[in-house]
Image (cartoon, rainbow over all chains, first blue to last red; front, side):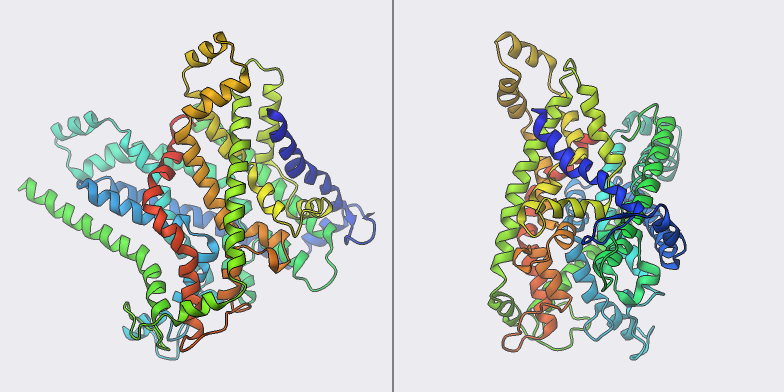
Length: 290
Length: 279
């Protein structure tokens, strides 16, 4: 029974690893690969755009992770205080919804909502309340100044709700006797939140952050569908950089060079996973993430 | 005095969540409204000014629309079934504690979560296997998901050991045990994890973008991307404007899921908790 799974893993996961050897060659898919040592890596490290993509990846992923987690925790804490169960159910159903929409749909919706024209909801709102002049409309997804801000907001909109699921599970596991005991000791709502609820979710917060930190380097689709040529300075991440270099460069692709970037990315990602795994073992009584 | 304080909090808390729900819903509502609005400037209206169906007529008059929709359905169904088969088989192997080579198999799978060949070597392998520009690649490639496989294993571990023992005593082979006991006992997990796969396949864009260049094999996400980014905008029919058509296209893509979503939501949440309980 393990054979089908084994074959899938071999073909789709292990076979590509053999292709890593191209990182040390000059290869364009037509001629045979020619070994060139570390030339690809030298070229990569001397590229300004590569370093930009690298720092963008780290900054965008980490800020996104911290923001959505922070929002999810706050929302969960307050969601947990809702007494009316029907209302709670409806709210949960609504806030989970955007998670299931594809990034293509999300990007399509927000490129319309944020459009710098009289069609764009946000821009017309800002003009109508007098924050912006008629001719000062902001092209949020097309300006290097605003792109990241818009990207973070869209991510918060899409993922905060779904992230609350895991925190709500922790919250529902808290022993109610603790709250009763606290009430007897004279603790109010805030006191209970501060001294019982929050410490209980603190461990879950750490777990969520560790699990997701390990995936920091994988950022691709969400950035890819929201970016355009005008914002690549702040929006290009390693995976999209590899994509453009290979498929959109306009010349014959240099597979050797882009494989080298991919290898660098995989190694950094691998180190991150191992570090996070050790960290996880330390704070979660020996449980790793893999 | 104290009672009153609590109710004030509840009211404020309730209002905050109504506001939050509105923030989630307004962008979708706006798209829905604008898809019916034939006026040229939408602005801040949250209700169509000039109601009309021309947007939808334009989308559906597009002759190349039904094909991507069918492709989306077919790949989602085939992919989900295949992915569930792989997932349950792999998970079943992982709970055979006395099987020789089990540890090797587990590590063999887990290693793929830590390290991979990267975008370009993977692309070159799939190209060499002549899988690019076929639907096989978008069905087969995402089918093995080790994370879901581990979730499934956690669920299998919850099946009482006495059931396996009695099956063995009754002379069931491991395969029979799998089909007669493990699978029927795991309906909840199959539904949850199956739905997760279905959403992944339905929403897939990355694999199409990377491995399929022939527009005949595009799924609906690729089609929508083409329409809303303007490269493949359908001809506007009647009094529809370009933006009305874009809005209508988005609604056509998300509508099937939106209708099913309220009924499916609880299974999604269950799936997450299957993993969270034991992890």
